[in-house]
Amino acid sequence: MFRACLQRKIHPVIGQALFLEYEALFGREAPWKRCLLTAEERRWLFEDFLSICEWTEIYYTWRPNLRDEADNHIIELAVAGSVDAIITRNVRDYQRQELKFTDIRILTPASFLREFPCLP
Image (cartoon, one colour):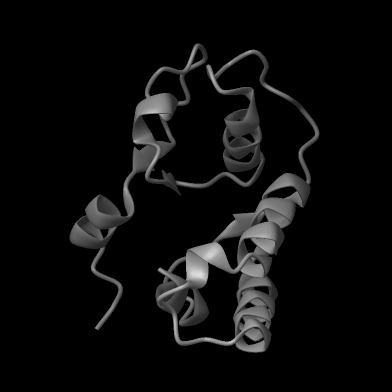
């Protein structure tokens, strides 16, 4: 997915809350145990990824919507950024929205890549 973003085949949006989540993820060692990238290289990857993201401000909150309050900012970011899809492994929680945004599809990474084969 990162490769497709960096090749500008998909156009990610990012806002304050998602930025903080990604920053924390890239800074932790545990998720990267089997990765060959050093901490510095991960930081470079994160910065390269950020350089192609469209910074999106959220001006309206859609609450309550999801059972997990921590996920609501993703729906709000998707609406504010006029995205076509949210790509997540957490599909189940997004299928239980109180408010339905029918223009935004919820896809797993695998289903997204099957439907839109971006990578060589």
